[in-house]
Structures are given as C-alpha cells and as structure tokens.
Image 1 (cartoon, rainbow, N blue to C red):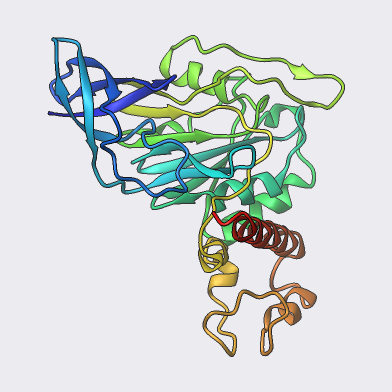
Image 2: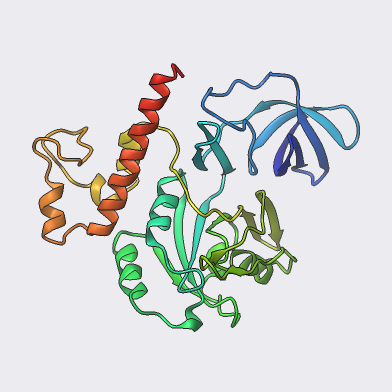
Length: 301
C-alpha cells in the first residue's frame, strides 16, 4: 500500500492513503536504502510503501522517488536534514520588521530548495517599508514571484489564488508571522510566538513540519528556522541556485565565480549588474560548503 506522510515525530509517522484512511507508521528495521549523508530517511510529503498490520498501523518498507525537497545541513550531526518534500512550490515568508527583514536568509532558503517553484512573501507591510522595496524589485527581476502581505490586517488576497490546487511548503524564520498566516489560510490554531526583545527575533513555536489542508489549498508548515546552512552537495548546485550566476558564461563551464581565471563575475559586481549583497552571500555559502567538505575528508566520512 502507498500513503503520504503528514507528520513525523520521534520516528513515528502519521500518513494518509489516497482513499483518506489514516495510518500510524514506523520504519521496518533498516530496509530503506538512502544516502549515508541523510539524517532522516522520511520527511513530511514523502510517499511511502507500507505493510499494514492493523486497520490503523503499519510498517514502512520503501520510499518513492521525490520530485522536490527543502533540505538543510545540520552541523551538530554533520548530515543533511530534509524537512519537506514533493511540494509543487515553496513560499518563503519574511517580514518588514520584528524581526528585521533579512534577504540573506531568503537567499539561503532558496539555495536549500530544489525541484519546485519559489515565491517570496513579505509580511507586516502595515509597519511600513523602506529599503525592502529595493530587495523586492531585485527578487522580481530574478524571476521570483514576490508578494507584499499583512496577516495582521488580513491582507492576503493576492496570495490565496496562487495556493489553490497546489502543495506549498511555507518556510521562514520564527516571528515573521508564518503560523499566523497558516491560521488565516486554513482556520487552524497553530501556536503563535512572541518576538524576543533582546534579539528582535522570533521564538520557536512550530517544532516539526506539519501537513495542513483546507478545500483545495494544501500546505506544509515547516519549523521556524533562525539560520539555514544549505545542504551538503556539489558546489556547482549551489552556484546554479543563483539565477544571475548560473547565466554567466565564463571561460570554464565549471567556474564557481570565486576568483577563478577567466571569471567575469567580479567585473559584473563592480558595475552593478550583479547585486553585491547576494554575491557576498553566495561566497559565504560556498566557503561554508567547502569547509564542510574538508571536515568530512579529515574525519574520513
């Protein structure tokens, strides 16, 4: 039988079959063949094969191929953690203030997504916008659908039509209003957190990914994340997560735009064709990735 994972807690998985029957599943021994760099073999959104042993419980025997994923690197275990999969699109939620707008978080979230369309929502526009307008224009020029919303004022009319008929993963740091947005869309009662006065950032309220739906809108609400390290992968995949870098035709096709011979990017940054902040953020991620690779080699991983 096949079911889709809706919630994952302590190696127990809540899933639904296509006919709507719910099951509580566990993994049968070590039957899943997954890459050794994966921290969790099953994520919310996965389709799994399982053998039922009662009307409500069963054992997972296989994982079907994924079409998309949101994955980050976990330093504490030196493995990739996949948080949500098989979504049609991802909505990265940021805020104007409280917590402050953080475009480099958005860039890291984009670099941690694969196989799906990406949209960006800027919440709390009722607090007023300033330099955020330039960033919105930048992301739109790169091909990302960007929406200005105010959950507090119930102003999400531009967003709702884009969610219908699709499975959307919601991604954002704590405090930007992601849980409030989910509540507004679905009528659910996800716990809403406060903002830390000391650091002007959110306190965690959602501690695991959760599949929610209402009518023809389906969401995967992911945990609030303060910092994202993109997943351990080939550096060229990180480069290609930046449309403006992917499009540059340097002397060598495998150029990572980090000072290599014949690289054109530095001159394009100086002339303003490529945004300096995004490029510096890319280099930071690239150097992080190289450091992880070196550490893995030293530890004979």
